[in-house]
Image (spheres, rainbow, N blue to C red):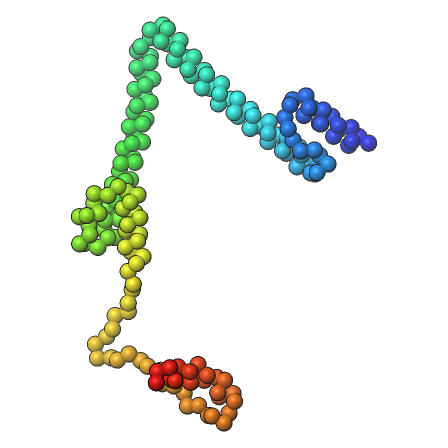
Length: 174
């Protein structure tokens, strides 16, 4: 009876907060509680990010009102330095990746491929490398091995069954 009272209390809490959660009849009580807490946490995170954005914009507006341009300049310059560092890392990565891809490309195509952007270059070199067929090198002086068909005993059904593919192949050649 106490379990039913607790369930009614949680349902009444949900009704009072206005969140929509499936009824506990269709789910286990633990899953119901988990879903309820997850929704609350998501709503709280969303509200937190909105409040942080509002706080930052209010702080900037306050500095502008006071005409404290020095503080604004310092704030923007520190953000700019962080972005510059990230941009340099990206440029270095892109240059290294481009060089690696160009080295993998055939020599006669490198000049034409050098002008492409990184995504296109990756796509083209992937297509070039995957379309090349790798053939085993043939050694001079050796012929290719040809399988000799086995002798078929025409009176033995087992021998015919084992060699049926060879029999059909020999008729196709003729």
